[in-house]
Amino acid sequence: MPTLTGAIIRQQLQYDLIGKDSQRGITLSYGWLANQCGHAMLGFVPTHLVYYVLTHWFCVSNAAPKAAIGVALFWVAFETYNVIKPLQKQKGQTAAFPPDWKNIIYDTATDLGFFCAGAMAAGLLLGYRHWMLGVFVVVALLLRKPTHYWYQTKMYQQAAEYPIQFRLNQWDGPMDPEDEQAVRAFASITESGYHLLITGAYKSGKTSLGVALANEFSIRHQPCKYLTAVKLFGLFAEAETDTPKVPTRIWTWRKASFLVIDDINTGLPDDPDMITPAIFLRHMQHPELGELNKKAL
View 1 (tube, rainbow, N blue to C red):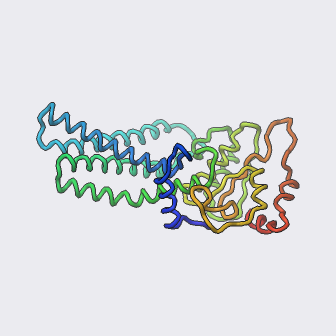
View 2 (view 1 turned 135 degrees about the vertical axis):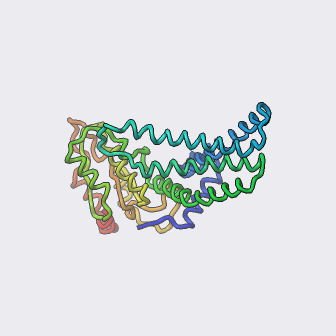
View 3 (view 1 turned 90 degrees about the vertical axis):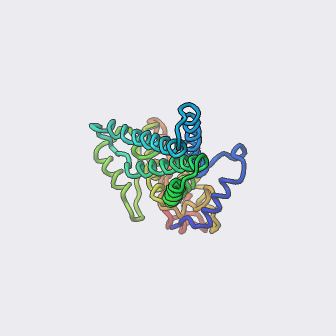
């Protein structure tokens, strides 16, 4: 199974930091970096503003640490509310696929770390205190592990090439109880060799459900890939490459642990099957790569 080595992560960092987004767009990993820079600035800038108000309007002494602590506590309260409010709203509701609250809380704690780091950095500039430096260093050290985790998570998600960003708890379409159980069982598998066929009418949520399932595996740092059937037919004839390339060609579909094959048929009631099992097998059985394709699937 392919993994993200240090060399690949450094390659992604270079890709994200060097180059113009107006020319090539932004990646999920770049978006995460920009988001955390924004969180740090939301701690840094308000601390300066609060410090100015405390010193110039109220003549408060020792204003720098008070401003930094006040801003940090504000964001702690705000983010705590952001987590508690959805939990209260969900009480009494029977969601088919409940949110991964452990993952959400970890994300919130990471955001709070950047808020606090920005506030403490501003406090140090406005009025140096040894203890503030200690807090800043401790927060920075605590952020190392979650930063590594979340940056890799975004790399796993963008390498999968999903058409949308969608999680399993967001899927709210109608589903029979036995189908819900099958989806939950599939989402929790840890072994290879399983297949899940998602059928339904046109616009019944087949793509969303498939992407949501795969995205849960991406968040667990499993290599995934999303392809349409026609795109896969073309890739059946392409040999493997051992040279990973960021941001989306870190692994090929054959090396993915979870493969979503979309748009096999329209699902419209009067449309005949455009891709039958016989057509699929004919494309898969490439003269030179047929066995490799079969093994991958």
